[in-house]
Image (cartoon, rainbow over all chains, first blue to last red; front, top):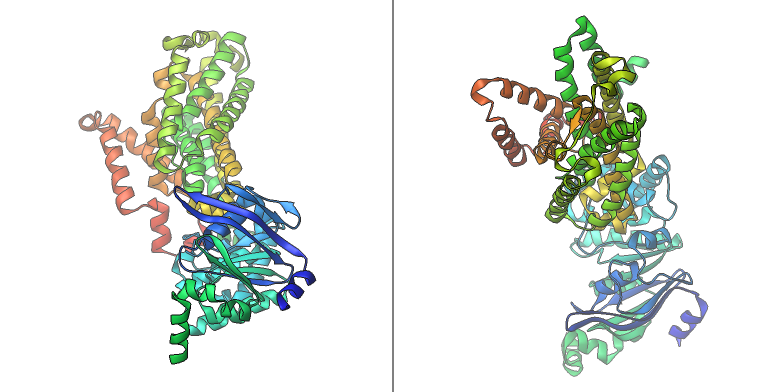
Length: 259
Length: 325
C-alpha cells in the first residue's frame, strides 16, 4: 500500500508515542501516536475540539503531557520549554495570531531569527528576517507596527516569524483560516515553496480542499484519539472519518450522491 | 559626516549632554543649592531609568523597586560604619550583593504576572523592611548612624559632598548607558518581546524566565549603588526611609510621565517630576499636597497618554520614533 511505502522510505523526524493530556474530566488528547517523516507534509484534521491544537501544545512544550513521549530528531523533548524546542529546529504558528503588537514587522521577524535554531546576532537576524519577509510577501510592511497588519498579514507574520527560526519541522495551526480565496491560494504556494526548501510540515487545517491538495499523509483526530491515518484518498473514503465529520456515514453517502 | 551621525542617532549625544550639564552646572560659582537640587534629580533619574528596564522593556511593573535602593544603602553604610570600608568599595559591593539577591528573588516572583507580580514586589519590599527592622547588626528599627569621621578619607564633609555628587552623576551616566545598551541589544529585543506577549516570545525562542530574572537583577545594581551613596551622604539610615514605598511610586510616575520603554523618557520624566515636586514642596499652599498631585498625574497619564511625553512626541511626529529612542 502507498502508506506503507511512504512510511518506510522516510526516516521519522518527529515521533509521538502515546501522548495524552487531561483537562479536568476531559481527555483532550488520549494516547496519540504518529510520526512525521523527513520532507513530509502531514495534515492533522478533525472536528472542533478534537484536540489538534492541544497536540501542538504538547509537541512544542507549551503544555506538559500527562503521559507519553515526544521525540524529535531522535531526542526526547517531552516537557521541554518551548524556547528550547525551537532552538532544536521545531517552530510553530498560532491559530489565534499572536503579534508583538507595537513592535515593527521587521522586529517581530528578528525575534524569530535571533532566538531560533541558529541563535543569530542582531545583524545576522535582520538579514534573515528580511529574506523571509520577502518570501512570504511582507517586504513592503517591514517598518509598520505588527498591529496594523490585516488578518491575512498577521497570518503571514506568524508564518514568517516561525520560518525565521530556520526550522527543520514547522507546525502550522490553521494558517489558512480567515483568508479570502486569493490569499489562500498565495499561502498554499508559500507552503509548497517551503516543502521544496526541505522543511517538513505538520499542519492543522479545516479547509479540506487545501489540506487534501497539500498533504502527503493525513492524520484524523476525534475526541483526542487517532481515528485514521494514511494517504488522503484512503482517509477521505474511510467511513469512520466521514461519520466524525458529517454524522451518519450512510446519510453522508446519500448527501454525496444527491450533490 | 560627524554632524550627520549626530542627527541620525542623537540619543547617545543627548545622554552625554545631560550628564555633562549635571557635572558642570553646579561647578559654576560653586553653587551648592543647585548641586543639592540636581543630586535629588539624579537619584530620581537613576531609579526611573533602571525601573524602565522592567516596566518599559519587559512589561513588568515593579512596585517595590525601592527595595534595591534601601538595601544598597544598608549594605554600604554598614560596611563603612562597622568595618571601615572605603566608600567606593562599599558602594560597589552593595550593588553586587543587591544584584545577586535580586536574581534569587527574581527567579521566585517572576513566575507571577500582572497585578500578582506587582503585589509580590511590594511584598519583597515590606518583607525586607520588616527583616531589617528586626536585624540587630543593622541597628533594628533605629538604623545606623555614621560618625563624622566617616567623611575624613574624602577630605572632610564639605569636599565629600562634592565627591558623592559626582559619583551619583557617574551612576546616572551608567544607568543611561545601560538603558541604551540593553535597548539596542539582542537581550533588549527579547525583553521587549516579553513585554508585548510573553507566551508568544517563549514560543519564538526567547528564554523568558532567564531574561526576566536577568533584567530584574540588572535593574537592581545601579539603584543599589545610588542608595549606597545617598545614605552615606545622609549619614544615617533607618527602615522607614530606606524602604519608602512613596519613593517607589514616584519612580513609577517618573517613568510613565517621560514615556515607558524609551531611553530619553525616564530621564526627562524623572527630571521634570523632581522639579515639580521641589516647587510644590516649597510652595506653602501645596507643601502637604505634593503626593496628591503625583497621584493625579499618574491617573491622567495612564488614562490619556499611556506613552508619556515620548509616546506623545512619537505619535505627533512619527519620524522621531526612529531617531529619538
